[in-house]
Image (cartoon, rainbow, N blue to C red; front, top):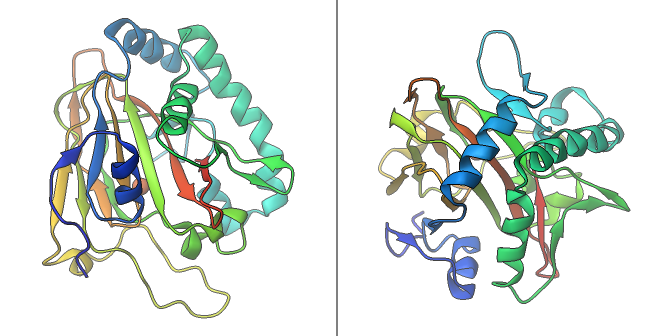
Length: 260
Ligand SMILES: [Fe+2]
């Protein structure tokens, strides 16, 4: 089922933000979100930060946490208990860089939305938002769609999910994100969480696709219910690809909530 009305990048406006949440356009780009000095400071601070790795075999470094990682082996209580440490780890990067991309994104969203915009929360406890990543590896075809991935979390109530990424460093080549306009709607057996990573390529066959480049200084936002993948890249000498991002969900009361 195709839902896009075109295959080009759009600017951030109130109308376009709603269209992106409704999966009617492929992406919004905010060019010049940060200047060269801010990019440099952020990349340096991230590399000096408390970088962790998912496992020894891949080289996807991150600072913070990813809620989805808790879906399989840990409880919601364990997830919420780990949030303060993750917040402290990224706050240390923001402080060292004297630049907080997360707050800048929230401010931008607030000025382009007519309902509250804030970090997601479960009862009174906040989620984590703003995961820092450093990698030039490929990321396989997957979807991020909380109503199916995390139905028993507060974010399972959203009716639209976006992902924003800010790129502090540019690659020499590669590293494009490919998004396929085929909103995920898997058959779900009761009590089961379907696998959403490493999806079968047959799923996107014939789907309209959109590709964007991770240009340093820009923020790009797209609808993560569409299957998407990131191509491997070649870093510049001495560089990597430092980025920060989170999801943005639209709750039933139209408020936007952020989490990673
Ligand atoms: Fe994703």
